[in-house]
Every structure is written in structure tokens, then in C-alpha cells.
Image (cartoon, rainbow, N blue to C red):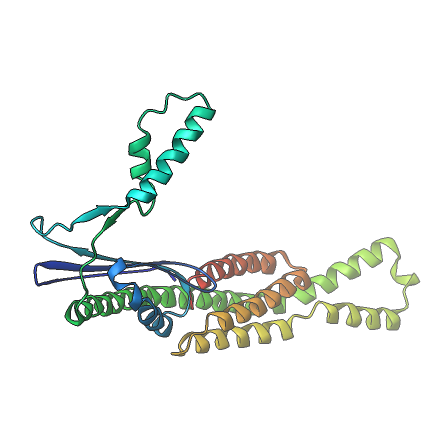
Length: 287
């Protein structure tokens, strides 16, 4: 599920900021951008995220801003700089390049310039951690609000399917007599009443019309929709369960449409399918 949370705190001439963003994903994918001085705390932060975030592609950025007059000193690794410079020079000569700005390039290579890291106190860690906890709470609030919106939309879609089912139930009794009458007319036109065994005809009509009966599909569709609404209200993470139920709803709708042999019911079924597709799209955002 998508989500966003941010928190900031000012303490001892430093501003601590934690920003959390997430996109949909089947699994939990955590990416932490943590200051080097706090790298040993990454496992603690990851464990907290795993307990509260079930899935999603989550990016968490930690930043600490210091005043301009508290700049950190830096040192140059001369040996590493020399090594990079010699390699660049050799490559330039081999390629007949004039080799301009080789020193600048070498200075931009990893680990050449090292910034002195301050010793992190327990108080600084607590400030960063409390900021992280606040950002995580804001993140969860954002996702809960989004979840409430999704829940209302899913309830609306399923209720629309149930309303369409009522229309099918109203149309269904009108369907079979029309089908029976149409078959009798075709038989009289191409075979003739005098050439028809009425007893055998009645048997075949009963058999054929039974194949078109959609009573079971209507009952199962209502049952699946009711179960979906029940599971939706659960406090547990039911995203997968809702996905499975929506598949069952789709099967009943498709079977109903193929067996109906009625233009009006098939039009209603198309509307059901449209609502179900919207349900499936929204379920991609549900845990």
C-alpha cells in the first residue's frame, strides 16, 4: 500500500528529519538511507519496520542538519588518490587523450575524501530514534486513512454487484418462458407439430432448460459477496483472502452470463464485471 510519513525535531543545534515513502509491492522491501555514524543502528530500525509494515517498497531517509558554523573537517587518502590518478593517466595515454582534469576526477572517486565522523552519543541516537518513531506513526496514520477510503470504495463496488444481482433475479423468471416459446416456434417451423413426439419433446426441453438454470450461481454469488464484506471488516490483514474471494465472485458472474441466454441479463452481467474489475484494482493496494 502506498504511504507517506515525515517528522522533524530540533535538538542541540541539530535538526533531525525522517521521511518514509512506500509503493505497492507483494513483499516488504526496505531501503534505509542512514547517516554513516548511525549505521550500527540499522538492524534495530529494520526490525521496527518489519513489525509494523507488512509489505510494500519502503524508502526511509534519515537526515541530520547542522548549523553552518559547525562544519565537519575532511581528510584526503593520498595513497588512494595517487592510485586513481595513475590509473586514469595510464588510460588517457592509451587512448591518446590529453588527460585534462584527471586530478579532479580522481578526487571524486569513492573514499578519496573522508569526512570526520563525530562520535554519536546515546542522546543523539535517542533523538533520531524518537523522530523515526514519530515519522512511522504518521506513516501508519496516512495508510490507515487511505485504507478507510479503499474500504468505502470496495463496499460500494460489492453493493453495486448485489444490486445488479437483484436485477438478474427480477429478470430471470421472464427468461425461461421466452426461451421455451422460441424453441417451440423453431421446432414447429422446421419440423412441424405432426412430426414431433410431444413426450420426448417435453423431456428434452426440461433437460435443455435445466442447463440454463442460474439459481445456484445466484445463490453462490450472493454468498461470496456477503463473505467479502464480512472479511473486509476484519481487523486482520485480509488482502490475499479478499483476492481469492473476488476470483470466486468472478467465476459465478462469468458462469451466469454464459448460461443466461438472455440479452438483458448479459447486459447486467457486463456491469457486474466492470464493478469487479474496479474491486481487483483496489485490492492491489490492500494488505
